[in-house]
Image (cartoon, rainbow over all chains, first blue to last red):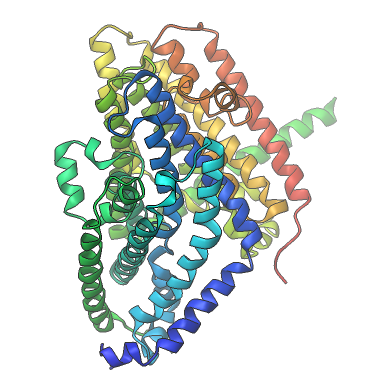
Length: 271
Length: 278
């Protein structure tokens, strides 16, 4: 039995780096097609911006104003590729269906670290080839310059890195659930829906009804989009990063516990 | 003359046998889904929650701002519900058309081509989706929105059959858009990007009154990607008394036209299909 030990993580740093690099390299083969994909993503963002522009014609958009909401949508739309569009269940449902999961568990690396490393390469690729182009296209389409002249970008990107890790953990847990549900795509889409609603993707959290705000802040979702966006707009304090850090720690623990449960659940059938 | 009559009879017989076979395949698909009852129940509950969260996004905007371009919360709810119902009908019958990319990438379409049936007829019943979650959610929003408008006298009971008509023609329009988009896959293989624009983004846009958008986008959503025909155009007449009764024959004609175009395009695309497998 392979149990979680700190040494099994640290001893394989080189392996994790290779896994991440391979995932990055695999994706880069399709960069032409993915760059086109960005166009679709930017259209979505533009559409959301149009809704706020239309609303802004008749109503005041509060502390954001029309320009602020355009910046808000630009950043959240670009961030989706890092903090939301993580591989469905980190590929675990597929492994469960094919039986590959048994082999994955036999590897001399911890399943969570193995899949997290692979996903890290994927997320790095998506950041470079999707988030940045979408951000630039939206800035151009809406005639914007980076908020706060780009001064807030470093701290916002730091929060976004944490958000990517939180998303990775959530998808790991969703993936593991497929051992009980045989397919977890509904949980994946449920997670996406929560991202839209509770992470402040389209509507800033302070505009949600109070009861929904309470639900949102009791979950990790606000730290996946809203917190990075507030930092980007210069409206958030650096202390928000502590929340991200806390959720990273809690979810890591949950992932490790879930892996232990998974080991007891896996049955190999057939010969 | 006799030959023409014979041709017609054999064609009718073929259509009848296709329909019979289609029903059989749908029954098989439902039965196979019911083998995983827990999945089905979980999927339905989560689908309803997803729908609810999507409507909440629209409802929160309305609660915050009161109305959108003069459209009340009930009117926008109606737009949302009609789109939900039409989309549900489309995806119930045509979900596999939406997922054609998987068949193209993995070479599964080649297997379908070997079957002695039209590809579309083999493809569509493979995954007949029973979308209870969407029906419950769409139904609840529709009852709430129409109920309020009936109560205030904004609409009469005639709105109900008119809405059913709009939902059905809307489903045809959405299916046609989905089919035309999927057909592009015969050349490009990957279609998810295109679907993002022609289906996801367009349907999201049509949840709000089209006057919210720049003119060019409004025109686009009524012509090139005609999702506006699904809910916005019928709502103008049914809810606001704008345009005229001619909206309904127009919707029927437009639905037939886009479906015909999509089917022709599909037939052309499939004749140009080159397998991706080895």
